[in-house]
Length: 169
Image (tube, one colour):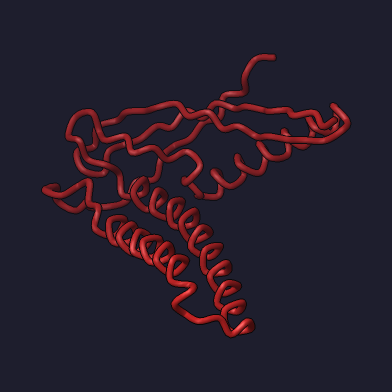
């Protein structure tokens, strides 16, 4: 039996809008998870996972705390939010596309090795084509999505100020 443990920390994300200068903030909870047959080691694994996330955020990887929160005054979405969101989604879709490509190469190898007639594999090919089309369309949508259309480009990128608030035990 493995114990499943979690560790949480609350991040207060303070933002100065790149477009209008308005200050606003939101809270985001980071969650570290750990699993181990020993309860203490599961708790330590969860704390280590949380510590790694906090270190990444402090180093400027805002993908863990990014939510598209437009400025309440001018509706501008900060440039770092868009960039971090695209990087995070790109990693997720890249892994999925890589897994699909790996499986497709195995199927292609089986077809070549067994010298099957390509017509007998047509149902599998027809299932794969929509998946590839989906990934291509998804990538184009990600590239073309512009939440700040109609806003002027910011004078400078203003990264957020992040404060971690340790939860009471």
